[in-house]
Amino acid sequence: MEQLSSYPGITLQSIPIYLLLLLLSSLRFGAFLLASPFFGSRMVPLQVRIVFSFSIGVWVLNNIKLPPLAVLVSADLIPIVLQEIFIGLTCGLTLAICFGTVILAGEKIAATSGLAFASQVDPTSGAQSPVISQIFSLFLLVLFFSLNGHLVIFELLFNSYERLPIGGVAEYQNMIEQALTSANFLFRTAVMIVLPIVSILFFMNLGVGFITKSAPQLNLFSFGFPMTILGTFFALYFSVDALQFVFGELIAEAIGIVKAVLASIDHGGE
Image 1 (cartoon, helix red, strand yellow):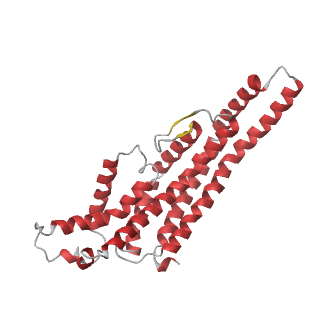
Image 2: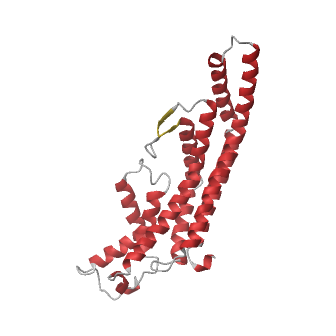
Image 3: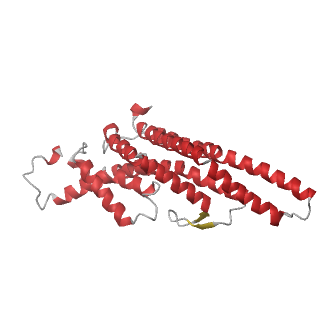
């Protein structure tokens, strides 16, 4: 606020400048909240996200270096606004892709076990998804908040203002390259979650095939499907501890990817 330090107080003429500075300081966090998991879902009303973004913007406004007032009243303001939105959206979408790992894993498990028909509307996205995917997603969100992952992400975003203040020149190529690593992480972690359960189901289906072949009266519909579904429930039950470990590693890796993205926003991150 050095540019406004000469003002004796808030006057009627300075109110638009203060509002513009508040809007500019809340864009990075606001764009992140729009694209991030949970905060960007339909469970959080738009009004709550707007108020939360401006509340963070008030705190950010008093702790960061602001561009000169001459920049705020010129055409140079447009690329600054777009850059702030791009940084926030990149971090939010990167985190959303990492969290989409469990949704992909749940869909593959449901398709293999015959539980794909057990689907309902996902409150976070408004689309139909298997119940297993929703259970995994809720499990991951609870673990994420219990480990204070959201506070770590907010701290990384706030520290990004020191690396690239508002009005600085971002290194877009490095950011995009770091964000694309989340796609590789998505499929790799999904395989780690799916492989043990799908392997159990494969051997169960193989055993059911031998049994139905030797005893034709035990057909697939009366014996195979119930056994597969029960086997899926037991496999999920006994793998809770392992899933907790994998989800914890997933959260740590997701935070690391977001940190790498924010570390590459300037030339020093190369």
